[in-house]
Image 1: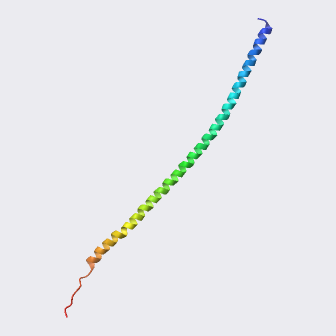
Image 2 (image 1 turned 90 degrees about the horizontal axis):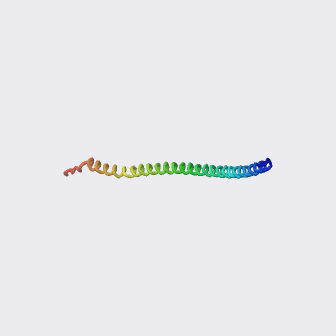
Image 3 (image 1 turned 135 degrees about the vertical axis):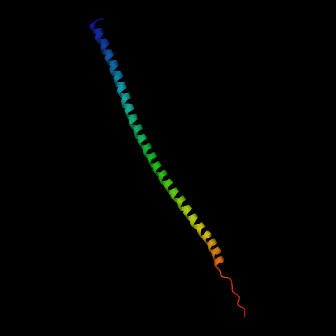
Amino acid sequence: MSLWQELEGLQKKKAELEGQLLLLEQKQKTLEDKTKILEEKLAIQEERARKLEEQLKNKNEATESLEFKTLELEKTLKKPARESEKKTVRETEKKPEAIVLAP
């Protein structure tokens, strides 16, 4: 093989390798861009999840507060009925009997 043929073979090999390198660089750039987009989407999803967790926490707290208030109001409504029953019993027990005076 002559030097010219060897040189020609090396130039072809160099051109082929440069083409492969260019393709790999383009692929790398595409993957970097895609990765960046996916990371941004992931960050958005994480932020949405955080906001939903916060909303859920607030709703749970509000619900618990309403449940507590409901129980307290129910207790308040039941107390007077029981107290009035007790008062009626006490009043009945405390009423003095009528004294009949003979003329």
